Amino acid sequence: MNVNPYVFEEQIKTLLAAGYTFVTAKDLGDILDGKMSLPQKPIVLTFDDGHWDLDTSVLPILKKYNIHVTAYIVPGFIGTNSDSLTPTQLQDIIKSGLVDVGAHTVHHAYLK
Ligand SMILES: [Zn+2]
Image 1 (tube, helix red, strand yellow):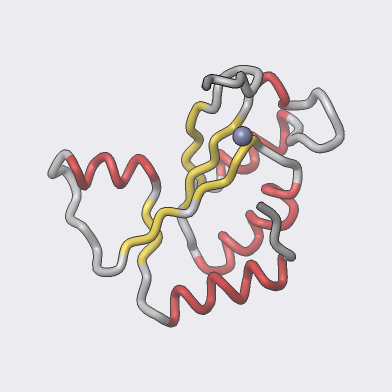
Image 2 (tube, protein in one colour):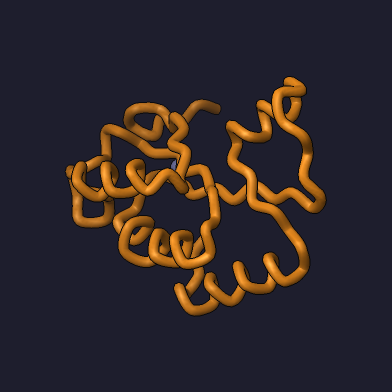
């Protein structure tokens, strides 16, 4: 659920050293559709909801190691509370080209 940024970076370094290749959820779809080849030791890393530290803590590490991930953002949360990304932060994340954004319902609906 939560990880210290230092520990997160160590986890990324460990996965890279072990030969894992980060693919996004979209890449996984392309692999399953035969549009992209499956790398050795693929791993999909996802982030939930769109918390502010995706921009301030995670993105710098993604940039440092050129890691591609998927973030499932709740658009109804953007800019509405102190725990969520601002619109500017979300644009920063998208412009990085390292984060694919997926849907997570508009208001984090309980779908069960
Ligand atoms: Zn969620």
